[in-house]
Image 1: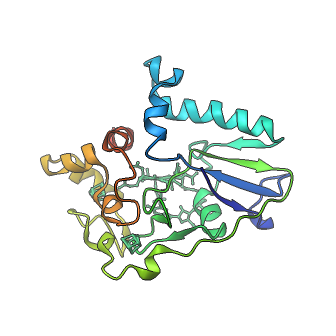
Image 2: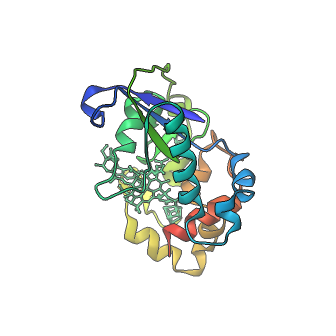
Length: 197
Ligand code: B12
Ligand code: SF4
Ligand code: SF4
């Protein structure tokens, strides 16, 4: 899905006038991916290989250039692009949050376009979230108001109690009522395997 568009001159790659951010349309995307050659060939990194192929096809069709979030370092500023698009916001735990995808918002890639595109902003769902369950959902207190303690997260995932995060996904992301039920747990487990090798 088209998650956002940014046209801020200071954030534009050379020659681009807009950058379109593309996210998986969940939950339909995961079963779709599994029918694709990149999944079926059993080789590593099926998600990134699928993204590279599909994004470059889309870019070719509109005269743009594909940019992948994993290309780097240096990495393209997806987080800053997302904020600047006005359709994603910084949550109380600093992860990006989106009005439909909640904390499960993520990007398969971006297309740098040689023309200007605009998309209306979306309000942050956090504005009307009274309980803010994301703030207290991490059992290791690794992700909260203080930010993200990556080593603390990994050492929790090494313990038996970390199995729930590894098989069902980060509990903080799952705690957000907005994106609930949107992501297949097996998709979360796949991403967590790559995150915590
Ligand atoms: C390096 C990186 C990481 C590192 C470090 C994160 C960090 N502390 O910044 C590690 C490996 C720890 C990481 C982890 C994860 N990441 Co990450 N990561 C990136 C990556 C590749 C580069 C970030 C970067 O340095 N950019 C370059 C700087 C110069 O530009 P910038 O992005 O505008 O910089 C801003 C961010 O760094 C932000 N920031 C600062 N601290 C933090 C902390 C967090 C947690 C986040 C999300 C952002 C953030 O502030 C900067 C200024 O605005 C981006 C993709 C990308 N290309 O941006 C994904 C990205 C930020 N990650 C993402 C995801 C999905 C994850 C994971 C959930 C992966 C997973 N499990 O499936 C985990 C989070 C933890 C969890 N418990 O599940 C998503 C965002 C999701 C969201 N809702 O916010 C991105 C955009 C990738 C994508 N394909 O969509 N990630
Ligand atoms: S749980 Fe509430 S405060 Fe936290 S990210 Fe989701 S909507 Fe925002
Ligand atoms: S994956 Fe688990 S331990 Fe790591 S930040 Fe998320 S909830 Fe905390």
